[in-house]
Length: 70
Image (tube, rainbow, N blue to C red; front, side, top):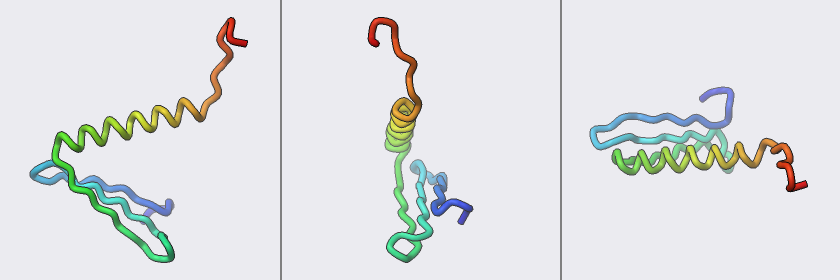
């Protein structure tokens, strides 16, 4: 485990990848969630994660006012 209370690992497989999310404390016990994805599913998952990260960044940082919208 790292300094965080979670760790994400990606392990290549013949069909695609296996994602392993380790949580140090979920309800008082460590838990590992594993998801096996083929290549197409892994690409869709990666695109969804990138979109979510971009959306979160957009919502996190304030935007300067646009002329005429004040």
